[in-house]
Image 1 (tube, helix red, strand yellow):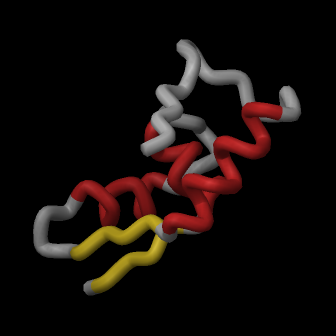
Image 2: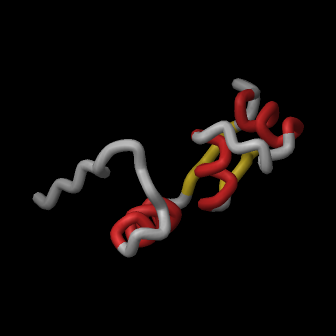
Length: 65
């Protein structure tokens, strides 16, 4: 199965948030599934962090090349 994670589902998954249903967490962990995250989700997380709506445990590395 192919899974495209929404930004909040990805954040809930990586932070072990209790709002993420166990069935969905199991599907994400299942090695038989292909799990995708849109580059737009990465952008959204960075923007939310920059405006103070998404605290991170450490600063996000930003590289401009």
